[in-house]
Image (cartoon, rainbow, N blue to C red; front, side):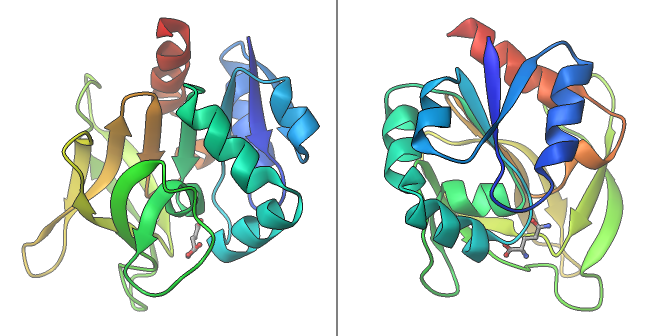
Length: 194
Ligand code: GLN
């Protein structure tokens, strides 16, 4: 089994290192030929407009979308979550539209644009530390999307930050930046189940 990490921009090296540490073969994906060789894909954090623009230029948007529709598991973190989603609440940008969710970019606002929180994720036995960096949250999910974790804003509103839709897993935060490999393991289990 080979897990590709989309390597156009962002922290793809950290994802690859974490996947290797739990026993996966990884390759960096920059072309649709690279994508043809993988069984699953991680879309890292970074800048979603840049990732979307470069992926469009290299013909990867259509290729990723059709592989995903054919059942290839995808894990998107932070900017990767935005790329997976169907829409953003603040304007147009290239998105795959495979995750039935509306996301708000930079949702936590300027004052706390980067922070760590301890969150409970459904399916994990104990809480995990989540690193949020100019992170999105999810405003609305479709009926097929399961919310595995949410955070509260200062007004008591609850916002999904980990979601799963069948073979698609997405987080608002950066699990690759801690030493906690459990979400990557959850993703690998998803691949093995298929
Ligand atoms: N704010 C970035 C975006 O909108 C995401 C930040 C990140 O991936 N850490 O794409």
